[in-house]
Image (cartoon, rainbow, N blue to C red; front, top):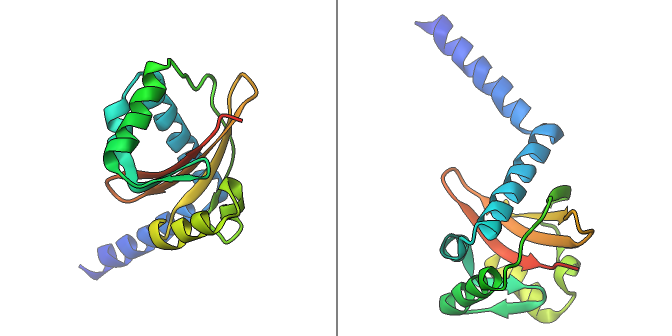
Length: 153
């Protein structure tokens, strides 16, 4: 019985080390971009609202109510906004510098300190129209949480 356990432990160690590779992280970030773009493009406002954290950071404004977040996503969809040709520019873990990506204000600093959970990533993407969008996202084993959205700019 012991040899299979040793093999399993070795296999798990290899899998964990591979998961930390930059190319795998980039693929995961591209998957995040793709999923959120598909939800926007297909008009899935309810799903976007459900995966959005409360409070939610929109550009440099904090939206504190779930109903207002749902209204935001409904308005995005009703306006016909599309994320055409999304391409991952960069993805990085949230750090002290991430605040400046949205706005270097006391409110945004407080938002990051209180509301953004460990493991969140700042993902920057470009569209085929040359516009940029920034997402603040965190994945867990079974869910994806969207903490913030900035753009297009």
